[in-house]
Length: 500
Image (cartoon, rainbow, N blue to C red; front, top):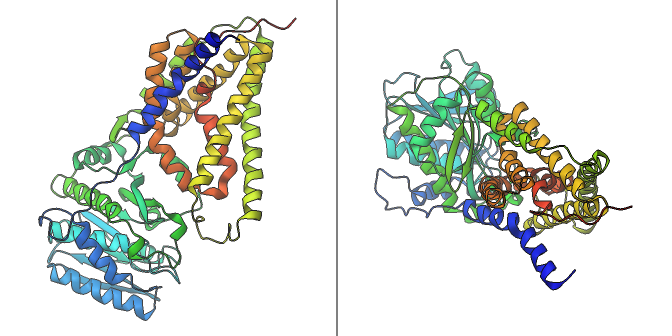
């Protein structure tokens, strides 16, 4: 190939990668500045919340311990000083705290966090974050007659306090709750699941101005994982609401390093802004309605769509599929994509065994190892290289029809996912459009679709890798092959002479 031909190939190869990378950069999650302790009274202040967290996360406070009792007493005093009525709800081996405005009923917004920590962990994030956010939010809002706080006990032992609260004779009928949790100590806040009709929940979300990451994909992924929060018990009981958590810095989860010094005040600020904004959106304007919505984020903006809209959009790229010249070669391209999936999973499994052998304590941490970012990057790069090699070999041997088969596989996969599970399948739709438009020779439109794919996939990638952790390296390597197959085949690819 001449130098000019190599340059043209490089331009074609970057025609989708460049706008995709730009979309990822623009959509990358960002944290707000932390408000100081002297911030205006009607605003959430991470400085004020952190002062509480520092007082309550001095030492481990497992349920029933003297340190746990000290924190409960301090919490009780803080809420009484804010004008709330506070009562202790005893249960066998547990003590929940319930705070409401004097004379208020049970209806309205319930803010939920748990007071106990894992043994050996000071619990600044898990769940000192929740305690600090709840008390600072209660201070900003005051004892509103529709605002309630529930501080559960025994969450670390299996959601015991939440279940005891719901089983009590005077338990409220299902209301709206906002639960605050953490499996990390830093990074962007994630609203990773909702319960109830998503139409009014998302209306309030958009009215609140919350800047946390939110995607309906997270709920689908979370349901496949062996994790629970107090929110699980309330969701099963028919409550509506939102579940927040931090994911980054998961190497400190349930360890002695979960201290106030390791908790990022900017993350506290983002969670607090969201809880305060959502509380205000529901307190004075109770919302009604039914129906489901698909939602995701692009450049910090929450995009909401009806499921049927995602299903229709997912099917449209199928219209780009024309009959290939030779089905055998097209099937070879599809087979190459399948081989890339298998090869990526095998590489991930091999990398996992290497790390287990070479990294002392790799499997000892409750959630994640320290310094996991290089492993995430290596997993992504290995997967991308595997995908590119599989496509290149198929194209080299079988020509243009192999590229057709490769792209068609990605388009069909996106259509099937969008129709079957639109809450998660929406993430594949922009890439399917990029591949379909490239097949038809619409280079500029394909680049725009690649940009949209980057905007949607950027925030998801930042969340899903630390959520799954390095223990699921085979899955982490397969993800790029599933999400980015359209990037492996450059625009306007020239087919080599077919083999004899």
